Amino acid sequence: MTAPYPYALTFDQYRERLARDHSRMVELAPSSLDAEVPACPGWTVEDLLRHTAMVYLHKAESIRTGAKPTGTWPPAELALLQPVHALQQCYGRLTEQFDAHAPEDPAFTWVKDDQSVGFWIRRLAHETSIHRYDLESALDSATPIDPDLATDGIDEILTVMLVRSKPDDDATGATVTLRSAGLAWTLAITRDVVTLERQVSDRADAQISGRPSELLLWLWGRGPLPEGARPSAPAEELRRRLASAT
Image 1 (spheres, rainbow, N blue to C red):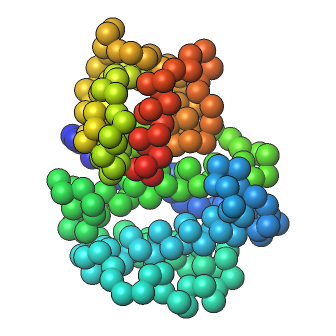
Image 2 (cartoon, one colour):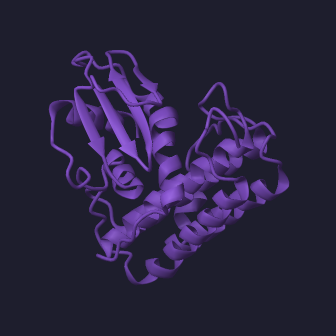
Image 3 (cartoon, rainbow, N blue to C red):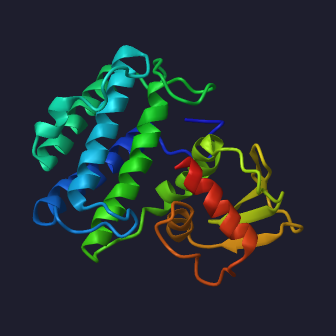
């Protein structure tokens, strides 16, 4: 995978990490279905599994049909499955579609410039890494996200997820520079859009640096500001905008 994803892994690497994190969820879930998920108030591990299963199935159908799934969603029969079984069955449906297509094959996505199966391979690797972390957090056993996946994940949440944020009449126009793994992203937060440049700005209103996993988890609302970063109004504004997109 190349531009517009300059820090992307190979599709084989995404799939390896997706398989590993999915397996970890299946391993841990049976003994913890009633545990509360700290980052998702009101959710138990069972809710997390059912959500992840639904996402897998939705994207499998987006690939299979080439269109956004319609009708009643999720299908009623999904709720009849035991949660771990639902996760495994929907993961199987997803990987069947990945196996049946080349990454460059067409698939419905919400990103106009990337209507490809490869988009979903990348997106679901990141989705699963976050939810694996969520499940481990419910058991007080959370482990970091791989640095290479997390670095690409930072770029993904800023370029693929943040574009879904709603206009914000309270936007200040503040700029925030994020730094990790020798890379930088500078964001300008305006009412209608958040613009991005992959470079440092010494004039940014806030500077936030951290290791890839801790910075990514903060961006996803899964952890505190990276160690050493100062709380600031621009940082809080960025997190609010991300929350509306994710």
